[in-house]
Length: 314
Image (tube, rainbow, N blue to C red; front, side, top):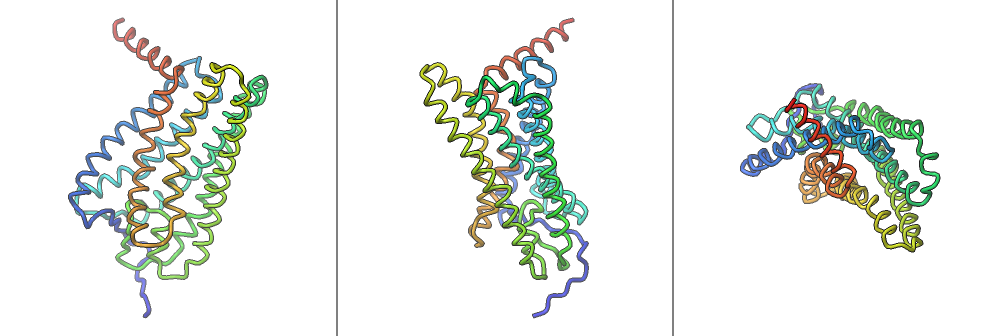
């Protein structure tokens, strides 16, 4: 059977959960609340880092990068998601889908690398505390941050054009909630072996390898903590790492579920909920996790609130 593709640049249709309109209405309300919390929470994290001198250290520099990334990442897909969930119109223009794909891949890959950088920062802080300020000086932190953002951009510039150059048939129905590479490959009429190999290689480089590095770093951290004789010292060392480890578990647990899952209808439907989780829920949880478990951040929030209160009184 020959598939005829009349216009590869026509609008896409993001099916989402169109077979369950009631679920989409419920998800619209939930996602809207989470999106507002994501914007406000991450903006506060970025603000207090730049405004509070006590947070001008590597750990909070990387945390502000993560918050900025989450702001951009969720904004690249959630507004379109809300439009599609609210009404029967589920189209996204070819240009809109292309931009979403480029940004989505860029920021998703950046977060994979940034979480590795944050794990290395915690490794140096716990295992080499006396050399921490020497090793993690501002220039190195800026270079590591640039490496994360640059790696993500290169990944997007490689994989996005390869995906968008595929021939797509008219009435391009994407069975997903965002323009992701796996979903776009499925609707192409061409041989996608090269693209699938590309996804596999990218998954190994950006998911498997970083996860191995992170686990190795925390293995070394655990050994270092066990050598600390003071219980107070052990608790302090563990408290600096638990927030990051929780964020890593949430992010990699869901992303690997989407990109490394078997190809089946059940897995694909479950993958939509996983995509919702790491695009909507995790960016909201990140500032909450770091705020609730960190006295420095809570102190900075209190000082910021006090300054705002005093300025309003004056």
